[in-house]
Length: 351
Figure 1 (cartoon, helix red, strand yellow):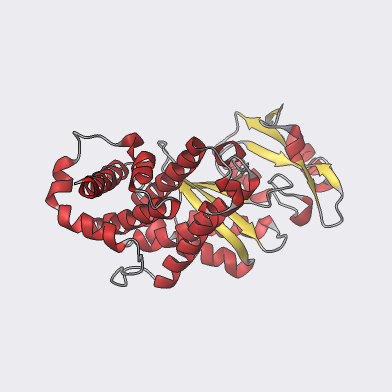
Figure 2 (cartoon, rainbow, N blue to C red):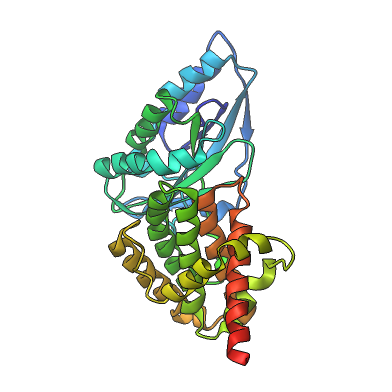
């Protein structure tokens, strides 16, 4: 159940859930209850437990015109039932939590709190993988996607998020659906390797977010150059990928002010690991390994060129989004610096 909302998912095959709904219906302070259909393909609500028994779990009831104190009472009583309740499609095994943060707190949360939150979750039930994405909205919200090594009781995971909410570190949280975006990544192989990359990318981002703005930009430029050079050794190919959002008129003064430094970053990006110990070289090596696995897997190689370019731009976009947040022009600045450096190198080879 969403903490300050009125919606609750129930399991039609769970006696506790059905009794709980009946109890709410019979309260003296009546709730106006109506059934709310799930919003996606019904087949993806069919899940299985360890015995491979398949059943429909997710349906939604909405409680309206309730007092805030009553909705908190509902929230405190709602239980999740281990293997009998998942919130993910059967082929995914990912869980997602949406969290809403205090205003302008997104970067601080990523830099100084998210690592502790993930550590607390991992101490309770070891994680196989995780990644996060900040979103453009008025709620400063972040989606955290978790993949556990074994089936877990979500009640305890909810309690961990509740602990952070009680500290006012976050305003609100909810368990949500994560439907992997096959349309964006074209096939399951590419999606699998992309999620691997997003995992180590998220670890790197937490370190980068602790840096000052100048070092942040320089590290992100290094990673963007490395993404492009891993995709192709051809500078023209790299420019074609990056130049979709290139603006010849804007950001030129920023480039000229530190032109020599940006060119040096470009040259050093081929070795990648000369970062003045700002971030872990072992994390950089893992990131480079996962990046290579993605861009050299057969599923990616077989894609049309436009699809490849779209996926690479999305990887760059998510890197910038995690690092700079949703209210920053730094992504545009970085892309334009990258294009100017590559364009300069192309002109040098032709002269």
